[in-house]
Image (cartoon, rainbow, N blue to C red; front, side, top):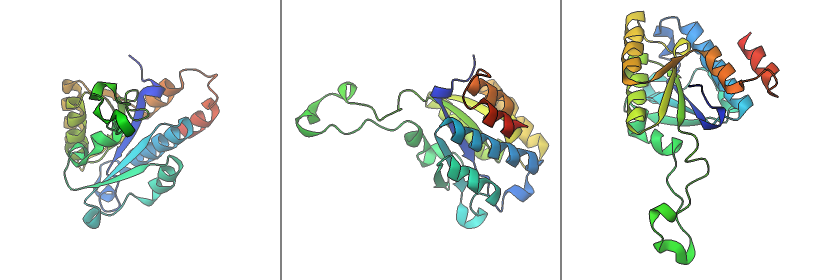
Length: 204
């Protein structure tokens, strides 16, 4: 099974100014998060960014801000460790639009879903800390019947052991573990894709 570009949404978890300095291998994780956001911008993949308790941990780091703007990322501030508990699921899968006029009495299955609501159930997920906020968000997304793909080289925790324990648990729960380059080339599928050179430049 390969990633489908048209079914994907990108979620970047808690790359924050007061959190990143404590992360293991933070430079690589952040660089790959920036690449993911820029790839999503180039390929028009809806992008979401979470920030855990931003009053205490700061906003997303400056290195990520430009890429977030390029991707038109929507930012969710949260206090719960799982972003799903704060409404991320409703952002990723918007509820049906209210029916207008005399059609208000239509049953739910006849109401029009929001644009893209039924077609982008694949969540490409990366972030910090892998064993806390990323893990809890991923498991809740699985419970809500999303397909979850975690980008391992864009994730971190304060210790390597905690990060790797998160990957073990996620794999056991049915999450697909991938790398930034795997995401890039599965989204592209072909060297003839119109954005191939732009994405290749980001990887190099």
